[in-house]
Amino acid sequence: MNPRDRHPSGGHRVAVTGIGLKTPVGHTLDEAYAAVLAGKPAATRLDRLVEAGLPVHIACLVPEFDTEPYLSRREARQIDRPARLLLCAAADALADAELPAGQPRERIGVQIGTGIGGLTSMEEATAGYVHRPRDLPVHTVPRTMANSPACRVALRHGFQGVCTTYSSACASGGTALAEAARRIRHGELDVAVAGGVDAAVSTVVLGSFARMRALSLRNDQPALASRPFDADRDGFVMGEGAVVLVLERWEAARARGARIHGEIAGYAENCDAFHIAAPHEDGELAARCMRAAVADAGLALADIGHISAHGTSTVPGDRAEARAVARCYGAEPPPVTAIKGVTGHLIGAAGALAAALALRCAADGLVPPIANLRASPEADLLDLVHRTPRAVAPAPVLSNAFGFGGQNACLVLAPPT
Image 1 (tube, helix red, strand yellow):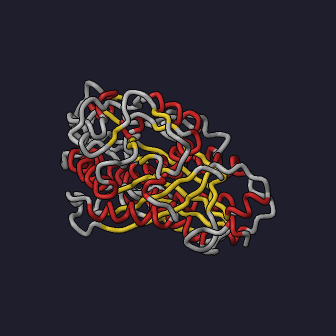
Image 2 (cartoon, helix red, strand yellow):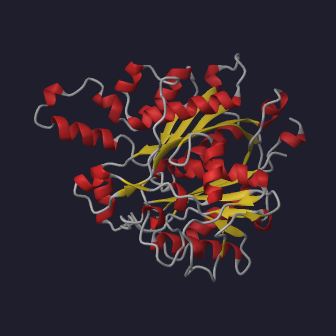
Image 3 (cartoon, one colour):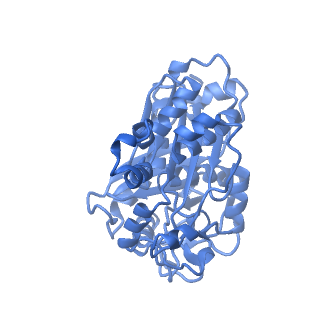
């Protein structure tokens, strides 16, 4: 192996050669990137949530798009929304990657994260058929399986490598990317189609999060509802979407002349082991995860150009993350951004969307502003970017994804070099 292609921690470097997404802020990376740079929130009021009697009336939905280029009418009927979104995002990512036709299918894997899985489809089946179970649609089980979206991608493209679904709550997308990168680095796969998906804007899901007081209730001000690190934050805004990255061995991508978006240079995962729905207040385990990801990349903390925070807009979550960053960096942290003020919280797809955008930011040397940030109780701990994008030197980005159960996944995304 050429020393340039060897990862500092051993094994192969991991290139990102394809990106596809279907999100509330666009159907392409260019659209999503423009939206977060502009700080334009995607939240909107939904009449169906009002009619359902829910206390929360707002969410961030994927804008409607033509699925015919991606799915037959039969497929569109048989599969549920998460699988539809993921199939479309995966198709775009693979088109972007332009993999060689002769790529061995047994060396291509699929790794997808989801926090909610098929719960919304189960909710629909229960509501419609609980009193007449003999009439249940024949595709009910495949629609409700958490691994169905990932398997649909493998089936569609004939990928015969390991096909795995990861569920680590809101860290799921980051977990899937980390595990896919690990398999590429250590030679288990040549190519991985990896990312996250969730589409959970439903009565049971939103009602449950509302009971936990995790959702913003700014029903009359959707655009102002999600406000990471802001003093007046009152919860997150539910989003939906699918984000897929195509990962390859760096030397193979370079040899075939592929366009390389950047590199998954480092990763780490751990667990707070503290509470099923709350982060540890001191941020220590999250800080350890961040430090481990940077060390895995063979970098020093000072090499990080900025941090893409998990930043959901909940009081305890943002506070704990701020303390984690402070534990890492002390009084001189790098600039910090959080995209959920614009995108909403995509649950299982959140970490994958943050990673995709971080790759573009790392290459361009731009840090998006945190939407709706006016004043922050965490301002003494963090260098929070707000109002306008900040120009920095192109450099690796540390991207955090944290989830219920104390699940922590941190990625280092580096520009192509």
